[in-house]
Length: 417
Image (cartoon, rainbow, N blue to C red):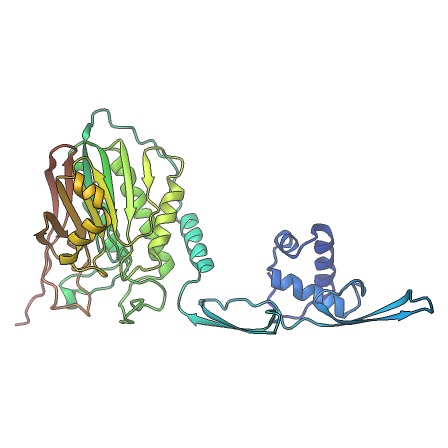
């Protein structure tokens, strides 16, 4: 694509004219020529200024300012003069790394736009930017589609196994001096692969599985390396692109391993406070990757609080940044009134707090999941929790019947002597 800051050559103008005449619209011509619409329009406007496109009916990049007519004695038009002027500015293109935050407009008495002011903010992904990140990450991941995963022969139709995964914080950077151990994207990935495989291997052979991804899968949401809302500076080990690519790869591998144990796998991702936008990349990438696999369902519900029913058990999921644990039972009762009345057991899982915590209120077991991540510099001395993963198995008629746990050895600092 030609940079608009470079001079436009005669061959550029000639090619733009040919593309437009062949395809008849700016969008189709630009796509065929590998140009942006704005670049094509600039080339055509330059061609018009050079006299290469004629003057009728209106030159590219120009608009009719007024027309005047010369009449004969019978009132018939014998000549029309069309006055043209340059259009008001070029097409607006969002600067790279910016997202539109607001638009102001000056309009005339008939409601037509005279001028617009577009406000952008640096460091936030626009929908187009996020789409490009997702597409690039899927392409770069290079994971083969539909490897030969045999459907398990013996599974229990009455059972569902839930795998809650919270606060992986991919690309969090920690050092031994800060937290007793090093932590970065490579270490986090190796730990994730090892411990999720152990967890699946230790769980019962239920026919159905639910992989519940409870937010903060990535430590940062863009390359500003700050929390999206509070603006805390984050220590990170890798770029956003590398982090998203690795996250997609890890969860694709996790799902394939779950398919070796369970006949059907449902995947639900809820956003956290660290991955408030990037969580969508994981959702859409997984949905696209497994779109043709009838054994995998990737849920596209975008709600912060998500609910699922298995027989007599009602299950809830939320990251934990917008709803306190003590409020989760009431939210479940309010949002799922029918299911609440028809079920005997209720379980609400969340993350965010980075340590195991269980409270029972209104007949709901509200449970916080531990993190796999090390403690970074900001939280050093604040978190003293152990690290582990659990799998919880539910019977359609009997509620929770089994748990599996994989523990990760803790790391500690050494006092100087």
